[in-house]
Image (cartoon, rainbow over all chains, first blue to last red; front, side):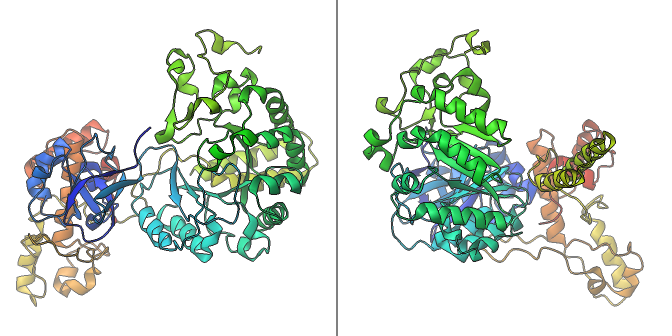
Length: 397
Length: 194
């Protein structure tokens, strides 16, 4: 696991500032304004070229040691043991708290744009418990951040909280992404409840060239779904929202978190998806992230992945036979039957991905998504064990 | 490009269906529509940095080329004088960053006297001295980052920089000119537009 922010030494900054970490290739590209770049003096080639490069109007400099900092210019010291800030990354320096935070990591498998802490649901297994605070300032910040992201970034995820609570702010963000990152796929995680009226949904028609909405559905019956999201009427609102999004020509992914009550009715849910929502582009069946509210509800939620095997296999088979794309997220390969391995994705963000000591000798570790860094023994599986050389070829299980 | 390939594939498969007696035209049309939508999600393998961009730096063989224009202008109205010195925007006391330099140079027609205009290739704007110097610095930085020796990263198109450009062009199968051609800029990862 990597830290995403840290206390640092810095000087010369008047306010929190987003900055592109720059070495020679980033400077050469000319794709970002010099005034929003920090020249990375930790890089030896940059140090060689420093005498002439220093005359350019950089926002400031990244150094290993405060003594390296050029006199009279803003700087931040980020030795590698503090924070893993690499060329191409976007950092935020916050002078008030003497902190630096990673806001974009080049090459990371899952860069997110955090839209809001507010939410209108209160899910039992929420990994990011909501707070009711005014955070519209994030709209501007996200737009500023997207301007510094690599133009060839394959995909970004907008998450929260519930991003639609930003109102037209979400449209602003998505439109801005379409302008500054037209080649980047955008994935927005929303509970879909605010789309019911149809007006909001249609405001996204044609707004972005490659946008997909990830919407959770936890049961084929309102009682189960409303219980999991702890909100009365949520099932009806989400269903109306899904149809409104479909009418607005939006791409939709259904996300199902595999908590115990959901797994118990999973087959009914996937049949419901095919019969009622055959237009969804992708179904993600996801292991639980053991943090936030989930930890408080372990007894209600926990089911060992080893005990899901039969129903998972049957559900994946049903969806596949009905031409619906399905993937399995957050489930280590050793907990899945071999027949499901082709559907398992390395879905856990690399900075919070983790392997157990037992994984050292595993032959398929490189293909496996591993576990969340905050996993505790209560959230693993009795099926966790290294897959041995030769075993990984066996498809008869 | 990738989109057109995806769509072309779908059209071909639709035709294939027709050739094999499929009478379901709606279904084929539906498949083509789907493929058109999928085009947006297709993986882009290569996207050249500079496409349909006018390269106003390609003709520069040395930084001093500006002075020749200056001598021309002395014979006419004298409106244009090439700025000779690069003035760094940096001053030791930190001030809030100045607004970024204008992204595109003013059209050449306003900046050169009629006598000069006739000597210039039609319609190609010329970079300002600062723009040119910054672009040469970018090229030098890219060359140095890729293991070539442009002399210094100082914005002067020196003999060492031109030699490094030629070596780079030779090693990458490009036309060896020692100049900042669009192909070379693509291979170096230098964008021509700000």
